[in-house]
Image (cartoon, rainbow, N blue to C red; front, side):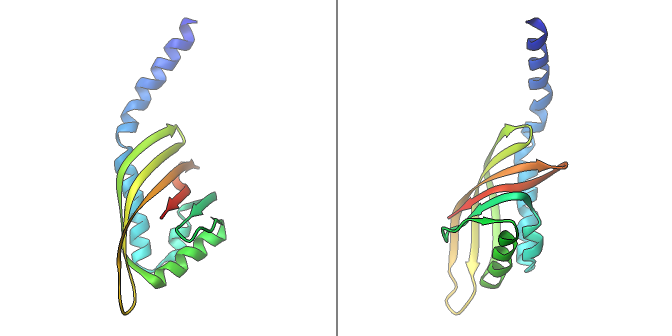
Length: 138
């Protein structure tokens, strides 16, 4: 009984410092996504999603796999000035982090509109790299 308790305590204390950096780590990932998007590189944005990812944008459609890349490629033609700001993160497990963020962008066209929405994203650790696994934004 004593050994499992010691092992659990050791895990908690060794994991804590990494948890403190989750906001910065996820903000860096969001900044990379926004930079790729703002350069018009929808394929690079799509590559930031895990192979088994699911995306649920405001159009009420479910996107998976290559459809996620196609969505972002199309969005680069309609939107600009994407900015993602982490509001909070929560470590769900050693391999999953939940993020709540603010998403801002401008529409392109004759009458541009500035949008300010929220998103919930679950990042998944895949082969040592944090990738978007579930992405919900409206």
